[in-house]
Length: 143
Image (cartoon, rainbow, N blue to C red):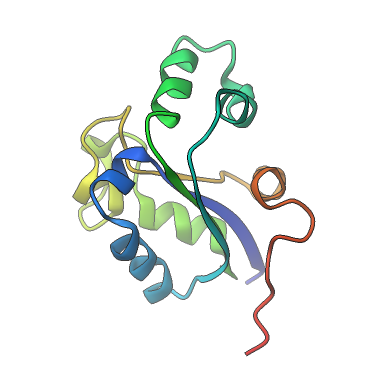
């Protein structure tokens, strides 16, 4: 198994519902380590830039507006097979399809307000982590 890093975002609905601690607990219990974290209220430029890959999709404007509707918590997670493990903990994008016990099955209101975001692969994770934490914003665990 490979040690990887992945980006996780607790979206505005997750922050509003005070789920930060609950979500972090699930990550840590699964063996993922938090190596960077910050709460921010995305600007228009940040939201558009982060989701630029979806620019041509019909839901893009609504997604950008939603992600600017309140603060988010961005986190870099690290661990063995972190990307897959994180995606399993989150559950399917559509909470109706998410397995019981996943974050989205337990807390998401809809496919649009689904509490969390996670990187979908190593290349995406690297770009997403750099987007929020730059070259020196991730803190390696030394103990």
